[in-house]
Amino acid sequence: MKPKSKILIIAGSDSSGGAGIQADIKTVTSLGSYAMTAITTITSQNTTGVFSVLPINPKEIEKQIFFTCKDIKPDAIKIGMLHSSRVINSVSKVLNKVNLKKIILDPVMIAKGGTKLINNSAIKTLKKKLFNKTFLLTPNIPEAEILTETRIKNTSDMIKSAKILLKLGVKNVLIKGGHTKTENIEDVLFTKKGIKIYKNKKIKTQNTHGTGCTLSSAIATFLSCGKPLNKSCELGIKYVNQAIRSTHNYGKGHGPINHLNSIKLENIFK
Image 1 (tube, rainbow, N blue to C red):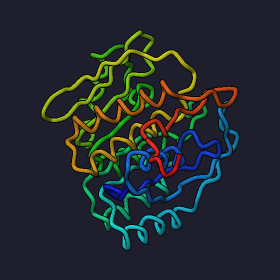
Image 2 (image 1 turned 45 degrees about the horizontal axis):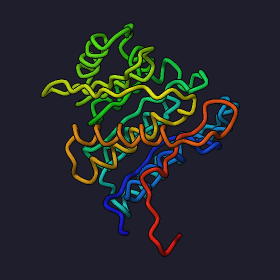
Image 3 (image 1 turned 45 degrees about the vertical axis):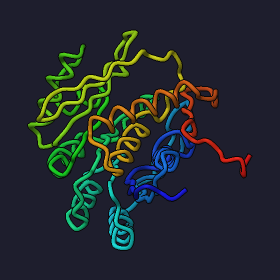
Image 4 (image 1 turned 135 degrees about the vertical axis):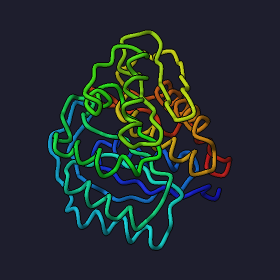
């Protein structure tokens, strides 16, 4: 099987393998594309929480992106955890040189266990430096609330928040509805052309570590293969839901999802 496209992932490392750049690589690979990386942080964590965060020097992050793209040009870029204004400025600077339109930004701000991963100054820099480069922004409800300084209680609030985010410069927004306390989840895609709502029944499980990273990487993969945005979001959500349904019970806290759910081994490997 030959890779269908090439994805550059700019994100933090998760030592437990469920989220971050590990989840991104697994997703891109499982969906048949080629994953490249620029690591922004090294975290020590497991399913119960984040214990330490070691930042990578912004200049080194810049080099990872530049030299990778100089040799192997990606079809799309997925951006995850950017922990400081210095890092965001470095990423913004090098993206000007790369000049790629399909940039998916997952504004990672809070870990599943509740640890805050970005400060207020960096949030302001994120809006100023990266939003105008972003083709698709994929915040969950708490992240959308922080970015728009509004409260989100329902789907109508999600749409209002998405409108604000579009005015801040991003081209398209997918607000993920997994944090709502309802039987069904509504993910809202807001574009200049209109609104698309994806409705799915909530799966009752605590094994949801890495769902946000996985979804943004899945959408980036489908987009990089030439699928339209609506379809890419639909397929990405489908992939994540199947990964949650078929998950394994690893760890004592928020366990990882099953990224391998899309892979079928040929007889030669069985």
